Image 1 (tube, one colour):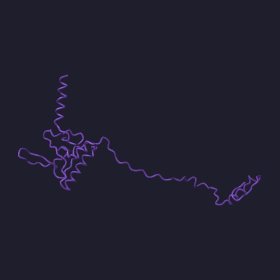
Image 2: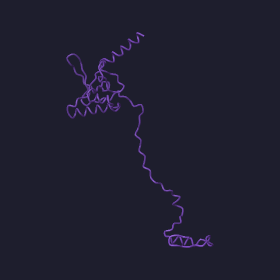
Image 3: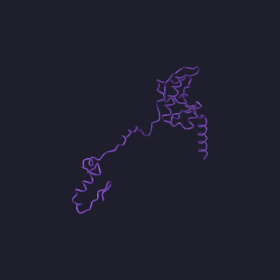
Image 4: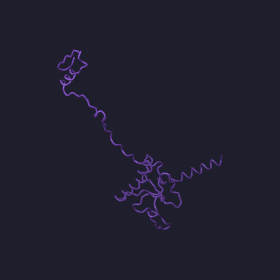
Length: 177
């Protein structure tokens, strides 16, 4: 019982030491400000047009694999989006010496492309279907149809029928009686 309480307290203390937003914003990466030996960098500040483009490209790389929800949008708005060096190739990292230690920073234009999350299902865009069209039945066209262009043609045809010889036929202007 006491061990579980102590373990919970340790977990609480370790999580409370890292400030929210000081964690790598790549989904699934556990790097935080307290990770030893791993540098973590903010998005580039939009000093000018070139830096603004770099910032947008960097943010675009991060949002390919992450939904921009309210929390993440708040981090973006408050300039609290961080990315660790694990997501940059060694050729994209500059090393420089400060008074006390060697520091690292991303080279201008470098984007986080390594160790990015993979999509669980790779989907390809479906090819749009061709629009539907009316298909005429060729059998109907091939059959000979008795089509009358005028009413008088119909009247002549009806009078010539032998089966109606015993019938009384009245031809009127608009109908047959």
